[in-house]
Length: 156
Image (cartoon, rainbow, N blue to C red):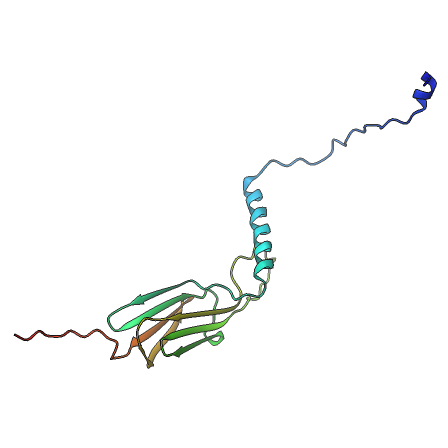
């Protein structure tokens, strides 16, 4: 190949990138927020229309079972409480509240929920009370008289 043939060949040309690109300092909080959003999208895609999880505590006293369920934003008219034999079932919906501004982050659970638990003793269905205060539903399940512990006096 002659020198003339080599000079006629097309060679790739390197162009300089513009120096006017905005550079941003690395912010670990923004990186974590982006990761959090990606995980949230992934979990939403996996979960689909599954009911939201409701954290709860169950306490047993001598005469009752007390169930406390966290329902932040829940309203009394949107919650149903049912008792059947030894099982408590709480269902309902936590609705999205109306907003006036731009929602920058959405972490609070909204949607349908379904919580069920079986207690280890018989309960009196006529003596069940439920109260909702400060986002916590408290259900007081009075034990049936047959399942309450009874002290037996020893005779000599």
